[in-house]
Image (cartoon, rainbow, N blue to C red; front, side, top):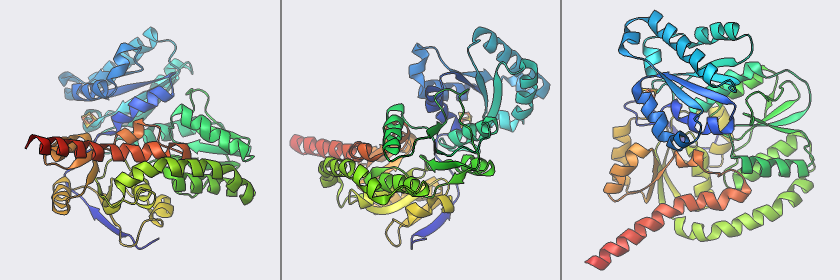
Length: 418
Ligand code: SF4
């Protein structure tokens, strides 16, 4: 690994919990339903985060744990069974039901795995019931996806067929574009996990080569490896360079001729470099501080430094999977300060001492920092925006240039008033 300085920090945290990932997972798999087994706080979080779905037919809900549930586990189990049965009567189209654990369900130790097992026996295969944890005690928001995908792995049929499996939720348009490029390189069998329908799970086995599209899928990758799949080691497909290396790694594992790869990718690369240029002018030389939240921080830091010229002050990450991140860390400059974990007070002190031009952070920290005159970017925006692939590199750069531009405009207006 390169000479990055790897540090660890523990203490108070300020991050979204894993329930948040339901917002993008339920859009990806419209035939699945996510039932949060939690309190009214959990219901409020999920409804405000996914508020737009209130106007459509929602595909998530909350089994509220009332005070009497907290007093007795038996009551909570009965209540949950009742809610699930009501839900399935009302919504017979549900094929996969995720019971999503929360802080309250963990505190009172509801055994969701057992509840799911019993329901699967009762429902006789009409609906598959799975469980995972989105609790804020254990997870940050992107880990919710890791938990949901890991829960699906045992349902994937086994096969030895050779295929490229893209793992991690991507915007459908991005997935289509990437798949088309892989096919033009000669990789004919390209599938995605999670699929667009929860019942159409790809098969898995010794012929499967897994290309991770997201950096926060440690448990899922391990489960896929246990099923015989090979995990392709590569940086993540953010920015021109990351996306190019990501595709080249896949092509290499399928023994595709390097000159075909270069000639196929070159037009995309040239177009993207040109498109980034105006944003690079705005970002070049600006100081960047990334607080830990999404686990996308290290690939983003690599892109913003190497392709946009930003100076990295500190790169926080909630968790660091060294093996998975090695290709990314190797691309960072010597002595980049990478901090795993969070002590939010100490990190904010360092932000104030260092006066960065831009801080990437959670929504809860952005407002106070903006009030102090520091420009911020919400890290959660990265999981809702189509940012993967060579074609999207300029959009990704623009996301970071925008707050700096806004900051300059505000300063100019204030000067005009004086
Ligand atoms: Fe809050 Fe925990 Fe519920 Fe998330 S799971 S909304 S952190 S109580």
